[in-house]
Length: 255
Image (cartoon, rainbow, N blue to C red; front, side, top):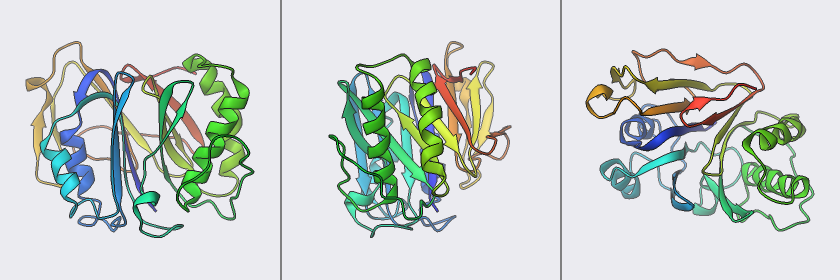
């Protein structure tokens, strides 16, 4: 199984602290060594990095850890292959365009015998169940709405679509269009919201502590979503089984 990391922020934020701890799970503190990737939204643009090497060995991952890219929506993934070879085209997150916006998707789980009918513009490049699920979601969203709907409308549609996929197996995922971050848990996802008054945070996977009061202003706020908690001294909230949440401006929206 894989590991997911997502950030949704009120103001552009760099993910160096979270990504540094997360990368250790890509072959050092855990066995997810079959590739990794990360995507940063910047306005309507997107920076997208993937590698078939493990996150702890990849020079591209080292570049990201040293270069503080700031974004309001970030999706990252370290892979333990269950379907599809260890190849660049099978590395998450995956990216597609819909309604003139980039969409980013990463999945943790295993969908058994999942081969949806794809008849529109969205087809997988690689051979993973994850990319097939993403293409089907994009296809069905395009069928359901003529143009970009509101976050609330998109959430309602996803509530209808997601159960049609998760009946094939575990379907933990992160999805973002740069406006919001959707997160769904079949088995394991946790989140926290960092906001004023900020405090110290200590990584679980590396000996590193940051005082967020030193690097944030009172108006900053960030929601962090992860497969298992990244820090040892913060309070993380577990998702309920089969729960879908949406985060906007660094906080979960009431549904």
